[in-house]
Length: 592
Image (cartoon, rainbow, N blue to C red; front, side, top):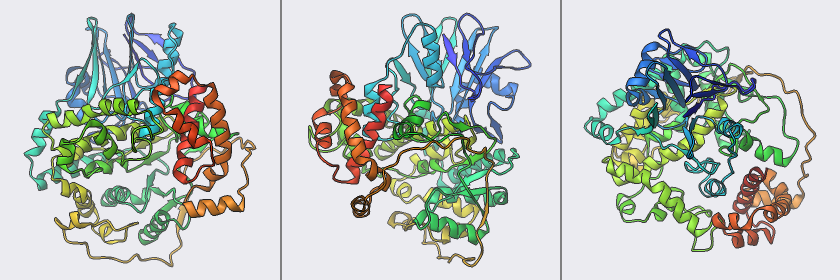
């Protein structure tokens, strides 16, 4: 039995050492508690009013709880984190992670060994050093392509399993056991809670995370801020604590885009400091299109198509995002009867909005029909788990989003924590349970998210968003907030630069110069000009790489005739361009 934990030391060589005959830790140094317990932390999260990370020692009481009651401890993690604890006196070990599985546990088993890891790169290296070479999975590529960034709980290597949400691992000399949260008990508990009491509990839960974050004394922490509702909810908690002056606020939108326009109006209205840059340090930029496309895939072992690469640098910057606000509302808004009376494939198509990669008539998708059916069967147990736990059908489908989201937001945040301390302060199991046990229209109207915002900073609801946010579902429960105009339009935008290590290398990367025809196409089709100018290059190179891939492997997961048909002529629209760019990136990673 081996436990492999990445404790985010990218500048150190991978190291391994044996604690005993059954436990192996890889990368970094394990800590010892006063009583002799050995432990490792991966990731970064809040635990009550404190933080848990590789940077600091963990209290003895927390380590004991991990060994004695991992279920209860898991529910109190707020953020992507995993804690490994080993008691040499009893031989008992536990690997317990956050309840959404944002810091996911990967398991490899064969007749001779079982290995549990938080990091696929470490898993691959460790097994190779012990005579096992993992093969990249074409099924994972198809899952990524069909369902979007991160796929859906598929592992990039054959023989590796990513454990579901709400599970953890315990091991004794007698063997290993995967255990899971009693979702039914949690749903029953929250179903009996009245709305006002539930909102109080969720508010206090999230407030605890923000108080924990105040214990860090970063030079210039960063909070994401856009024109949407979730980042504004983060701002409301910072304002309620009087902490907003400590932060820089970052928006990735370009000048003139709605997100950026609303962000700058908010910043001027409240005299916030706008961050010049995202707060990450890139030491070297890509030298080719292929390097640009596969850098994040290489770093994440095939899980992330954007985000960190090996050429980033570590700083002490802390970054707050707001993606888990989605769990307070209904991402899918499905009619309960539709969920009950549909097949797993129909539910999959509904959840992914019938996009071209999994929709269409039989034989028309880029992905093989048999694979789509297999993917639907693999994802449907999440819906069934929700139904068995007592969730309404619409809420059971929304539970699927929680599981899906961790493969994108969770993986991305995990990899960021190699270089910065990134956390989503809206991560709240209580918030998700509260929402999932409320009526569908209340969730569709984001009533919970807006009520939390109003409790912290009522004016934030009155100021304009990037689009109309108070729909008929919201208005069934609450009156429309009285509009408030932005002030401070004549005020200079305050800016500041985050802590950053200068870039050391800017390779000369060939970039095709856009032609007038390409610029016109991009405008008319609302396509990315960058992708448009690379489209013909990708079309040619993708055809070449397909010639190198094992046809039997590719045909098992993809519809080769549809893919080849798309490559036979110039790409007609932005969807096809985006799909072919995605497939090219995935196959580049698969092929090397």
